[in-house]
Image (cartoon, rainbow, N blue to C red; front, side, top):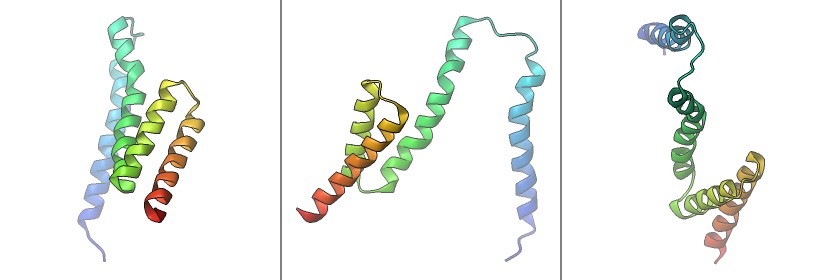
Length: 104
């Protein structure tokens, strides 16, 4: 089905995305020296990753396996494991929990 307003939405999203990426480059010309702003900017990638990943974990499966996978991921992260190990052990925790729930 063809919807003419789709192109308006597409152009709006493209414009907003472009502005978000272009404005900091144009407006901030010198190096940032403020230690508070730098520390804030250091945490942004982790915050964005967490805000996208955590809700997806709890909507992907039932609450108990999701909670177990989340707990395993937090524990592995606390123990400073690599990202691949955190993801693998978290998935393994969800799988084992789902199998236990299904067959016991």
